[in-house]
Amino acid sequence: MNKFFYSGAFAIFVLVLFLANETKVFSNMRTFVGSVFFMDSSTERTLKDAYTTSLLDDQRPVKILIVPGHDDKYFGAQFRGLREANINLELAEKLAKLFRAQGRFSVTVTRTQEGYNPVISDFLEREESAILAFVKQKKETMGSLIDRRIVGTVDSIEHVFAPGDTAFHLYGINYFANKNSFDIVLHIHFNDYPREDFRVAGKYKGVAIYIPESQYSNFYGSRALAEKIFERLLKFYPQSSFQREAEGIIPSQDLIAIGAYNTLDSAALLLEYGYLYEPQFQNEEIRDKTLDELALQTYIGTINLLGISYKTKFGSANLGRLDSPSLEYKEAGADVLKLQTALLSLNMYPPKGKTFLECPLSGIFFRCTKQSVLEFQVKYGISPALGYAGPITIKKLNAVLAE
Ligand SMILES: [Zn+2]
Image (cartoon, rainbow, N blue to C red; front, side, top):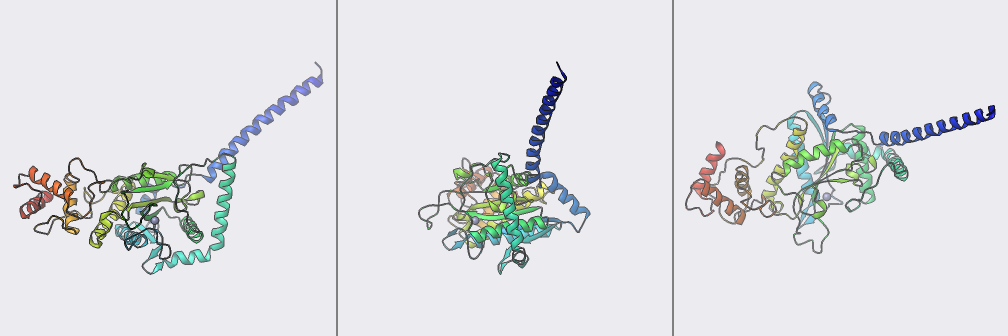
């Protein structure tokens, strides 16, 4: 053994150390790069903290951005003259009103009956180049993370891809939400699916919520919020029966609205509140009351996550004393919806053996309601129990509700 051997061995030893270290540094760097890009920006904790802060500091309310989907130019789905963009807006306004009345929320709605909210349209115009640069940089970063297999791509549901200006608009809203530290972003939509004849009602029904895919920064907060809202909505409406939405709460990697390419820090949901052709959306009076309910359930789900409970236990926009002395078979309107909701609150609607898929809160007095009323009459000894909501039945129902 000569000194050369020693020095040679030493050199190899150093080289091995160096390589080990390099590998370690490299693997740390992978995690590091990934975690900086995908550092949790919204969790259940940050959302709860936002509410706690709002109680202590009037200057820092919980900030909610409500985005009624589509606009006058691209109005989304349409069924028999009913445009999705309009109903999205009606629901968005009802939701905004509920949050504003609570007192600890600051709400921005991206458009009104008059068009885009100038706060948004001015921002998009002013910040156009910054927004484009922001999106470019995010796409490059994510592209390189995907190439290096630090981030995985996931197959997801095919969506109708947003046209160029819509895509810019949606990315711009994300950038706006990040710059203004919004806590929650809610995109309001009604559903439809590709089929042969759009004049005929489709076969799917129910509610679905899209959330950011699990690798994104805003995943945890979004999922926690989606779960609370979904739980509330399912008390009144069916979960989407479309097999592609079978999970109910569906993670998506490529929906811009909820943060494709990791472009959004806030908790973000894209809510599909039902299929546009469902019966409860066709009659104007019933639709208005249904939107009240959808808004209230979204509101209750959100405040529940923040640790606030709603003032009434059952929590419905359409539960209350029935004013009509009687309700006829085939009658439709707000009073029938109230009757169905009253029976629902007593666990008698949908009737035995049925679900919301066959027996929705439709506001239409048909077979489902008749069977439900009959069950009520049998339980309370009203005869003849034929399922017609006459004065005796309505009076009894009001008495039971008042208990
Ligand atoms: Zn839509």
